[in-house]
Image 1 (tube, rainbow, N blue to C red):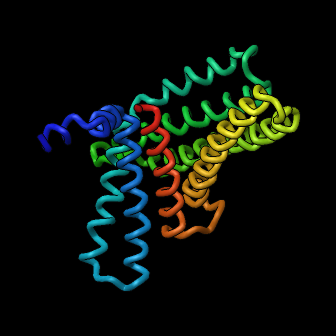
Image 2: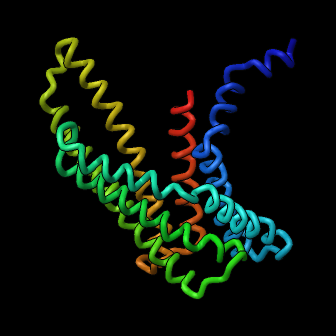
Length: 235
């Protein structure tokens, strides 16, 4: 009976739906990758022996390569999303529409350049331009994240304006205020994730002098946020 209760528990079913998605598996791998990046840095800074650091360095590198393989072909999805955002002239604020286009094109170009470096990263076919392509990938990702950050800040401003116009003394106003609060919480969470993610390409491009400890912690934080949002979507 105990085994049956465990096997058929709703959480187990939810977990299976979560790991059945590519996004779910990717976010879990990403969390372990960036935590390993932080922890390898921490062990190095505390003068730990190489035998303790090596497993976390291996996790960081191997999981990064696995995630690169999972992303192959995903650039098409973002090119399509950019075209859809450009055509959406009715249901979206003009500034948010252009931010959405910029974000999707940034991510699409990032994934395109990233895909071009896969064979080199996997050791299948060495490319002399691999480092330059990876740098361009980081630059495109940085641009996409900037657009998303601007959209988040603009959305928060818009929600503040809406909230000021709500009459919270009647029932409809209370319902609308709660709806605005939910949207604000979701936007704040995404904004935190974007700011954390900006440290990764920002550090790789030399825009900010950040060590692996900061980048690893920031990547872990944004990954946990993504795990949480993906988990809720598969509920």
